[in-house]
Image 1 (cartoon, rainbow, N blue to C red):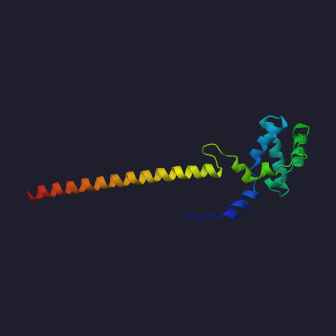
Image 2 (cartoon, rainbow, N blue to C red):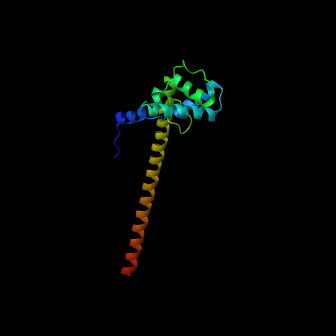
Image 3 (cartoon, rainbow, N blue to C red):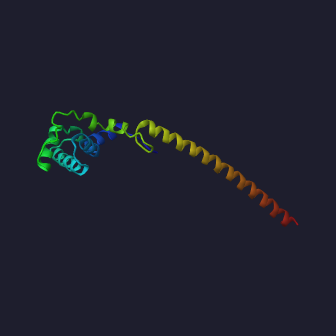
Length: 149
């Protein structure tokens, strides 16, 4: 049986850097750099943060600026940006609204679809089992008739 521990899940999520890809995308879109550069700058900032015992949610615009200066020789203009929304795992999940995404309404819809499909399959399995039992009973009846002569 699956036992869910939301507090443990959240603690694990908070401790990591799962939002780094989203942050790199944000840097690319807002700072006019290509994705590879954004990815490398964010990666450098993540390594520095992890080395200092910080979490992904603790990254700041200034940390990204330091990483950008070291990586590409110039700042990106992020020093004063509030990155809380970009780094918030819940906010990130809410943006995943395409089919197969992780946003709660999408997941609920997928779960409903799976539930409907499971009910359909259960009904089909029950019909096939009943047909198999009927066929077995008919076969046994014929076999008994042959044996009795």
